Every structure is written in structure tokens, then in C-alpha cells.
Length: 280
Image 1 (cartoon, rainbow, N blue to C red):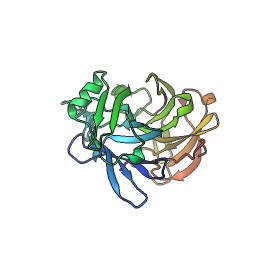
Image 2 (tube, helix red, strand yellow):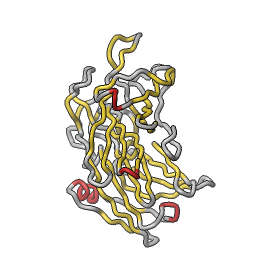
Image 3 (cartoon, one colour):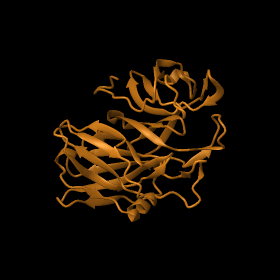
């Protein structure tokens, strides 16, 4: 399990990385009694960063429309990490999927299944309509895809950076999905209608007092606060106690930001919960 959000009826939607078998990621529904059922299976997933399976992560729900962030997957292999010479297990890692269901997710009782051929069809620009055993339908659309790797311009020893969209917050009224990319170190605004995106900021590395080298901040989640955003930061491996934090970013901070901690002395902060109406 990676991330969870509430459904309209108070159940939980949970993104799951899958097993060591590639492309076994899924989204599950867990009801108030703790019973799990699959909503969508066959999502991109693969071993990454010593994690046995990593694929679906951030989630956002608006009525019958579900947004699913697909993480880095096996774009890299290692350690030592390098680009996968065989190519990734799915062509739609580092992307955002939009799934429009025929019914509300709380009423769907049997799962939908994506096949590997569906991954390629989505990559090639086609929408995929799935049907489950109960007669419901779900149309899957590749809303946007980020560059799998880019030159490393933020510092550190790596020559390149992969993309790893990780956390999301939806502003449905303004057709905006805010995405945190944990490897590219970015906060991104995605238009939920067109799929076009804007990088709002790139977070600059931190300098640790005990280790005078710059290390990644690793942003993991975002919550809105008026015209600003709270962002949680995991910090980079070796994850020393007290190095994780929550910080505030505002447009006035610019698009190359090194932010002071608002809440510090944390360890491995992975997520934030935003109450309805955008209150953190």
C-alpha cells in the first residue's frame, strides 16, 4: 500500500505497488468493516529503489473520476543505479491516469483489469474502455506523461534525474491537479482537461550540518493553504532522524526554491492529509 483517500461514503481507496511480478499494481476499496475488494488491477508496477514493487501512488477523486499517479517503476536498475538497459516494464510509468467510471466507486463491486497491451494503447494516445463482471464500465485516459529522465541541474553527483510523480491534490473547481514529483524535486500544476502542465517550482537541495554535501529534499505530498502550499519533505537516504520536514511554498518564493522548515525535526514524512476546503 502506498496512498489512501476517502470515498464519498467514507470507505478508503488505496493505491498498491503490487508484487514482484511486473505490472501487478492495483487500486483497492477498503470498507468501514476492513473488507478489501479490487477496483482496478494490472496497473504499471515494478521493482524500484530496493522496494519490491512500486507503481501506483498518489490518488485524487472527483465524483466518478479517479486520478492515479504512476511512479518511477523500473526506469532505473541497481544499486548502483543506472538506466534500465532493457527498458521499463511499462511504457506509462511517470504519468497521470484519469479513469471515468459509469458508477460511483462505492457501488462498484467487481474489479476492472488492464492488460499490457492496454498500457501501449494508452501510450499511443488511445483511450481504453474496460468492463467488469457486474456490467460497469471505466474509461482510462493517459492525462499526461512526464519526461522519464532529465539532466540533473539541481546538484548532487547523479548525471540525470528520473521522474517520480508521488503525491497529488485536486482543485476540481479550477481543473487543476497539483502533483509532487519526489525525484525531479518539483511541484507541478496539471490541467485536468487538457493534460498540459506547468512546473511551479524546483526545490533546491539541502546542506546537512553533519555532511557538507547537498542532498535532495525529496518532496512527498502537498496541501493548499490560501494561495500557498504546504509540502512535506522526506529527505534523502540515509534518512537521519530529524531531517524530514514540512515547509511552506508561495508563488513569491519563485521557481527555484530553497525553503526553511515550517515544521521540522521529523523523520521520513511521506504524506499529508488535507481536509475538505483545502485546510491542512
